[in-house]
Structure formats: structure tokens, C-alpha cells
Amino acid sequence: MTPAAPSGTTSPRGDRRREALLAALDDRLKTTALDDISVADLTESAGITRSAFYFYFDSKAAAVGVLLAMVQDEAHAAVETAVRGEGDFRTRVTAALERLTDRVLDKAHIYRALLTARSKHAQTRDLWDDGRRALAVQIAEFLRAERAAGRAPEGVDADALAVGLIHINETVLEQLAYDPGRTREPLLTVAADMWVRTVYGRPDPAVDPAADPGRTT
Image (cartoon, rainbow, N blue to C red; front, side, top):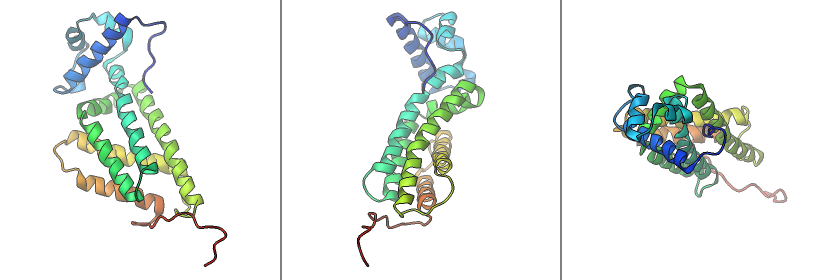
């Protein structure tokens, strides 16, 4: 889920140059918006030439796209908590959202840069969409299993619904990334409620084990 490396084998020295560029980008983004950072700023900080930068990345946005893997790893961990964690569904979703916002917004400068890069760089946008689709697979499987067990009502296509649920999380992250001093609990409470109502069609479902087919009432 990261941009492809240049063809051929990259030397250890080349790896160090690439990591130096990414470190310089990370550091500058803490104080400066992506649009206000120049390639010269990064190459000077990393101590490499401009041509070396373009050996690894075709633009600043492409370099930011490499950092997308960090966000996607945290998003996968959050989804795992929501669909396979312990406790009732609302508790799991709330815990997943808290983890996601804590981890991603610890590097809010990267998330803001990614939002900018996504709007301007097709490769970053494609990588973002690929990551969203990968997350949706796991959520859609959970939705279908809950419907098959009779715990969740039938509804719109599970794959499309899963993507919609991910958009809820992305909206929360975007709002908090641009307003890091904002109290997050109200946003997380609303987002968790949207997840619960979307999946189960009611605010606080009693999600019980599937009924025994041989059991009589």
C-alpha cells in the first residue's frame, strides 16, 4: 500500500537517503503546511541533491504517500478491534475509534499532509482508495456474518455499507486533524452510534449468540 520503489536493487546508501528525505519531510510538516515546503527544503535538510530526491519520488505528494502506510496500519488495527474485540459492539467500536484517533492524531501533521496530497496526487489518491477497500473487506464479512446469524437486519449491499462506515472514521480524523484542540468525545460518541445503528438498525442491540436450531421456546 505504498508507492512502488524504483526498479532494481536499492543500495544501503540509497535506503539511507530515502529515509533521510522522509525524516526531513516528517520534521518540516510539524511546523509547515505541505504546500509551503519546497523540494529544496527537503534536500537541504537531508543533505542530498535535488536529482536524488526525484530518483525516489516524483513529487512532494508522492513522498507523503509513503507515510500513508502508517495511517493504514492503525486503521486495520482499529477495524480488528471493532469486529473481533471483546465486549458488546458499541464498546468495541468506541475502543477502536479511541485507538485510531490517539495513534493517528499523535502525528496529525502527517494526516493533514496526506489529505492535501490525496487531493493533488493521483497515486496517493489511488493508494488511499486501495487501503479503504482492503479495510472494507473485513467489515463486510462481519456484516454478512451478523445478518446470517439473525443478529443484524438485511439491508443495502454489505460491501458498500462497509465503505460508508470507513468514511465516518475518516471524517472524524479529518475534523480532529485540523482542530487538534477540539474535545473528541462528542465526535466519537456520535460516530460509534452511527456504526451501531447502521449495522443493527437500533441504538443498543442485545447481540446474543446465534440460537440453537434444535432449541424450542
